[in-house]
Amino acid sequence: MSFQNRTILITGASRGIGKAIALRLAKEGANIVVAAKSVTEDPRLGGTIFSAAEEIEAAGGKALAVQVDIRHEEQIQSMVEQAVAKFGGIDVVINNASAIQLTPTEQTETKRFDLMHSINVRGTFLVVKHCIPWLKKGNNPHIITLSPPISLQPKWLGGHIAYTLTKYNMSMLALGWAAEFKGAGIASNALWPRTTIDTAAVRNLLGGEALAKMSRTPEIIADSVFYILLKTGLSCTGNTFIDEELLAAEGITDLDKYAVVPRGQLYNDLFV
Image (cartoon, rainbow, N blue to C red; front, top):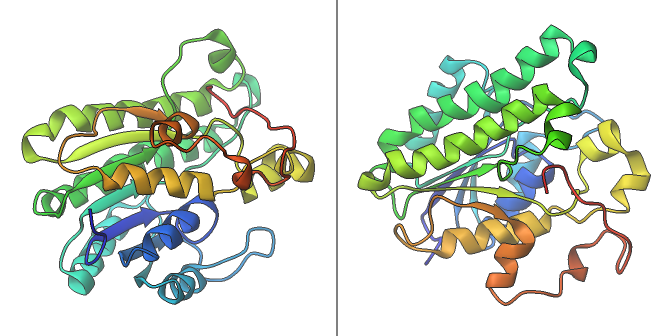
């Protein structure tokens, strides 16, 4: 399945996993809509929509940088309009933008609860809602949502229920869209890493340098997205994939190249 002239909208694509996905697909000649908030660089995070767009074009793709906060529906509508004006349509939506806070109920401030639900659930829903008219006309249309398999094990519910609710809701959206849009030929899947991924969130919020060294690079997610999007029609829909398992099904079992520290100890991500 060619990526030439396919337009792929990625939320949170200015850095980390989102940017890695963008660069992987840009190498295949895709058009990338870099949808994120960052227009000035935060030294703790790195990257803006403009620097990401430059890297995408250097990698062989075409890029459109759009500043958008997916908490605001009017900004989502403007983003979609700009994408269509630039590239003529939208073929793939990748829901990567997400907020995280791993706190128990009493330590979760209302504003953080609202932030996670506004971005992870409401924002993801509204992005897809406004892209659907174009996905219905798209070239091998697909929705990929970065969220985990749904597990009701107490350890995932008891420690940080506010965050867990949002990620499971994202997975329910992914599965729901697979059913809802089957008749329109739109595939929908969720994808989640087996191990922690070396991102700004891991370095700044979760475990710092020590956890980063026990993680894999974002490229493992980027390659997993690539293999999902190679599938045609509805041959691949309604799944909650784990990256390792997906790559193994493609015959890729030596994953050491993705380790931040080759042959080092890896730390399992949440929900797996």
